[in-house]
Length: 206
Image (tube, rainbow, N blue to C red):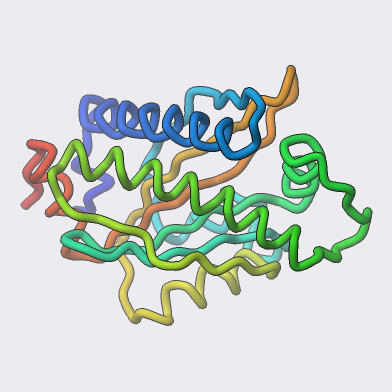
């Protein structure tokens, strides 16, 4: 039985609360960085089987912007912040007031700005998770790329040769006025990390 099958509604509520706190911290950090109000919608949190991850972002052949970070510390794993190109362009236009081209091209500065958004999200969420679990967790230097979702996920996981059977999915939405700018945030703990995280949360997994 997978970790996904053993989790009940209560445990998902705990993960959702951590996601809420992390999103709030990320909105505050982005507001300070941009010197303008930034709100984030209450994130949707769920556990998904690994083979369904690409489908959640439009399919394995969907071209996406992905920010990848390795989680280092007592519960290592992989983190992906993935947005479809339309949302990435909107984030650059509306959050950062950057003029963008209408095609698939991105300048080095645009990649850097998207990478920083992913870095802030990852750092805020990991800080909240570390506070709840008392486990040390820190993100590596982020890596940003434009590629098909299947290729991005395969590269990030094969590079370290490990993967769990499930991923924690946090569907985020920045709110700029009435428009929501959506992104997908995946935490894929290494196999031994999943049980360690849930034990620290008071949810033992055999």
